[in-house]
Image 1: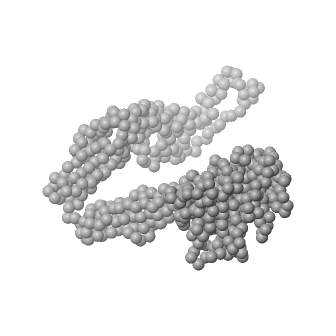
Image 2: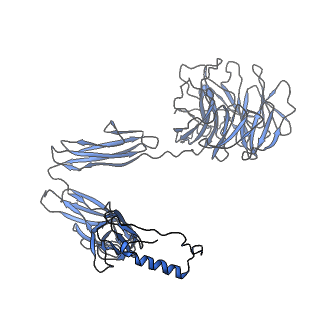
Image 3: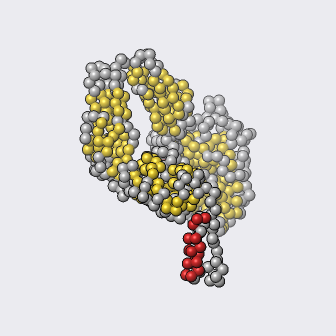
Amino acid sequence: MQVIRRAWVVLGVVAGLCLAGWAGAETGMGLVVDKVNLVLHRIDFKDNQIIYTSPPVGTGVKHGRFFPDGSGLAYVDENGLVFACDLDGNVQNSFTAFSTGSLSWTDSGIWIGGEGRAELYDPATGTMLDAVTPTGVPDPFKIKFRVLSHSETSYSALDHPPPVAKVVLLDQNNTVLDLGDGCSVGPSPDGNRFTHNLWESGKEHQTMRIQDRTGQVLHYFYLFDLIPYPANETDGWTWNSQGWSSNSPDIILIPAGRGYPQMDYSTMPWIYNLATGEAHCLHADPYAWDVFWYIKDYYSGKVGVEIPEVAIERFEAVPAGIRAGESATLEWRVVHADEVQLDGQVVAAEGSQAVSPAATTTYQLEAAGEGGPKTAQATVTVSDNLAPVVDAGPDVEVEVDVPAALNAAVNDDGLPDGNLVLQWTRESGPATVYFSHPSSEDTSISCPAAGEYVLRLTASDGDLSSFDEVVVTAVEEQELSIRILSPVAGDVWRVGEVREIEWTTVGIQDVVIYFSADDGAGWTPLASSIDDQSPEWEHFEWEIPDEPSTECWVRMESYFGDAPTQSGPFTIASEGEEEVVITGSCGCGSGGACPPAVLWAFFLLAAAALSRRIYTE
């Protein structure tokens, strides 16, 4: 990014006004056409820095402009197809236009200009709303609609090929305004001022005027006073069609080239801010003269992509204190960075490194990227006395107003005098927490309101201190329940099979399972404790015992005896026993709705067959 600040030569009625003073941080979006590959790029520019260059958009692109509100962009290709897109180039609508010329937005719609004619389209439907073919233009002028004003659609740029060049404006009454020798004009967003690329002998395409609607010259500049060409460059020039930002009255567009009159396709996209007197190049290398990037629009004040902020999520020394000759491990994790350095050495975005400093040392982690940079430090203290090692315990869930014990632990080396001071504190949370022993690692807590609490245990040996935190989530009291999903009433399981007892719970994290083969007269434990961290939680595999019965039950309850529940009665059948399945119609002619007498006959048949264990379903 190059910035240059120049003074303007101010002429006419604005003599004495200087615009070179106020410096500012420019932010906005640029649209450039790669004239070699005929593709469009969106350039996001934030605080005077290029933060994003989009992948190529479209093919055969000739011109492009942003939507009036900056929410999208439109471009026209070499076949006259107009595409309305979001800011990433995803096409929302397309239509065919009369011309492949310039493109401009007005309050009424989108104008496409060409040789001697311009058309107004509804960008949402592609419907042509109007067409303009100006008259009253003196010969031999060649009509071209370079760009049109946002506020009025009647202004047209006209020219004749050099060396005899003159620019005129044609208003809505076909009144010709002669702006003098030149090649092209471009109106400001309000249509009250115009850039005018001049054709001066010896300075062809190197000077520009800004004029008002009466032709009065407001500003005049020389290209080399505006763009920081290298010292040995003397043949810089600008293409026709210097334009204006689609939404800013202060920013003009300058497609700055080199090598005139060879026109060797060397062009850089520049913008110039009239209010700050600063020029910015929307290309990473302003002097990469082997590219041909032609600026078509600039939308000031917003960017199309939010670059994620570089974040150092973790950088710490473990342990933070060691004795001489011992080692510690630096551990880090960084996101959204292009490069990470640890004390000047490039490292991975996430990793660890062992260190053995002879004295207390502070290490620095640096992360760089479009959303950065960021730095963080970690210190390894080398001392005979080491800070206490604090573990506040695992995160826990508790019920509101129900005391719960915290599982903390503190270790210390006994230096300098063996005295250790502990203190529990609430760092955050919706209410005050009650600690049964706030100065001891063994404490219970009570949370009076539901929500998330961060509790800290700090330990100090009088010289060094350290802390650890635990997250406590307090929930309202729940009605404890267990629901057995398998087995259910009517199931038939066979001796020797491996089946799964399945269940769900509410408010219970540990269950006990029992089995009965005698209709609940006696119960055999199957599992004395299955907690919610076990791989068997909610899916306990059970090898069916050799206890054939039609009166089997499974019973479950919490480890503390809460929420006891039972399955329905199910059957355990002997291995190899025949199972007869009776389905469909009995043949009584009732169409499946058997009379009571027939149903009774089936019942007697089943009862008589119990010795053979014939089962019906």
